[in-house]
Image (cartoon, rainbow, N blue to C red; front, side, top):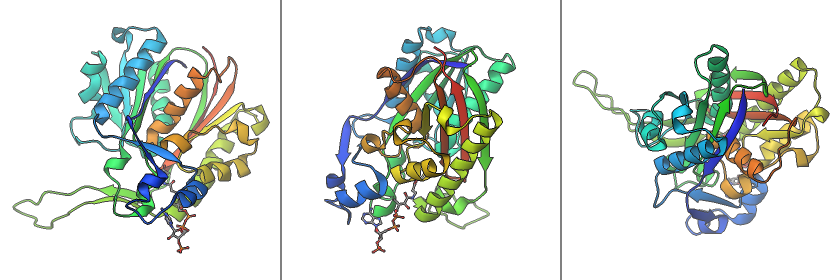
Length: 317
Ligand code: ACO
């Protein structure tokens, strides 16, 4: 398969590190040096569904296809206002689609996991044109009274349209069952037969542990796909990594190799937008004409689970 259209959308409201330091015990210097983040966009007047629709319509428009030519909608989302129905059902009509769809939740690794599914569907002849939409609102489940998680995240959506082609080469998925490093627990109703009340709690994170696992697992995933393709870091034009923390990206680069210029970032502007981070960055790079025919591109994402995934492309337009 190959990508023939990209689109992205972020909320209109921008929040700087200085804005956060007005109500949290934090400061611009700490956030910048520890994470690379300068600003993030937070939902205010719009909602996540607006961003999801906007990013999707832009991607379809860029692809040159009509909405009725999309055969399947694959959505990656950690959480939104509705637990049911899935986000794909909520936005399908507004995007102008009538095809079936499916939601996946593999946290920040959702985009690369969705690519694996799209590749399988195309190879099985189940779909010719697929829209992948990653739409995330992590700022809606952070604890804004604590500085540990809330400074890291931003909201956003990124989408791609895929069709048949030979650009997508290989993918490697990893899962290590470890809930405690990062989780968001919802409240549970009591029943007439079981009265334990579960209140639920906003995102809980073991930052240092997550940092270490993200660096080691992402580097392993990347090395696995490079080894399978008999490639080295020198052969790769772009390493497009999940934008969780600039220091995580540097940690991965220290193991995998290659100059800093091959590891683009948008985290300084958007913070960590979970599974939307790679498609948002891809969309910006496409619009800036940074990606060329034949470019070898590695994507690697990681997050709650712990899950991680890497894939590589030889770009075709
Ligand atoms: N502002 C100011 N000071 C802070 C803040 C803050 N927001 N947070 C922590 N500190 C202080 C700590 O209290 C500590 O002070 P002390 O030395 O007096 O005890 C000091 O800064 C260092 O804290 P550490 O936790 O050691 O900071 P660290 O360098 O590990 O950075 C961070 C913390 C940014 C969370 C890092 O561990 C990290 O990036 N982890 C991964 C987080 C991540 O990727 N999350 C996304 C999850 S989903 C995904 O996309 C993978």
